[in-house]
Length: 71
Ligand SMILES: [Zn+2]
Image 1 (cartoon, rainbow, N blue to C red):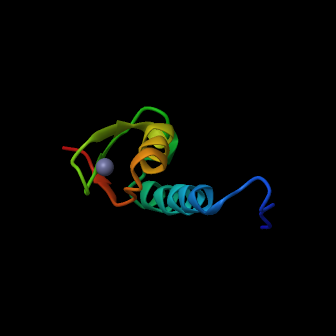
Image 2 (image 1 turned 45 degrees about the vertical axis):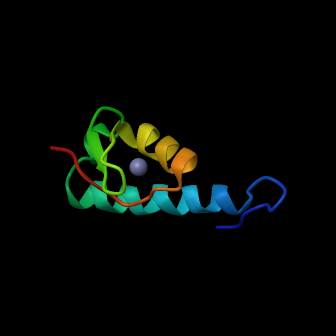
């Protein structure tokens, strides 16, 4: 995979890496059938995020990218 540095700055790369890591975790936990509707907790601040999109947005806004299962 190649990244255009004009489009992706360092923060975006981090978010992309986070999303990739998140997808791995989710697949391991069998969340992949519903990547938009699951809840996931940020281990850094405890905020619950909804869906892969919510988690990725939280990572982008806060720099937190240590997510775990909500509950
Ligand atoms: Zn957080």
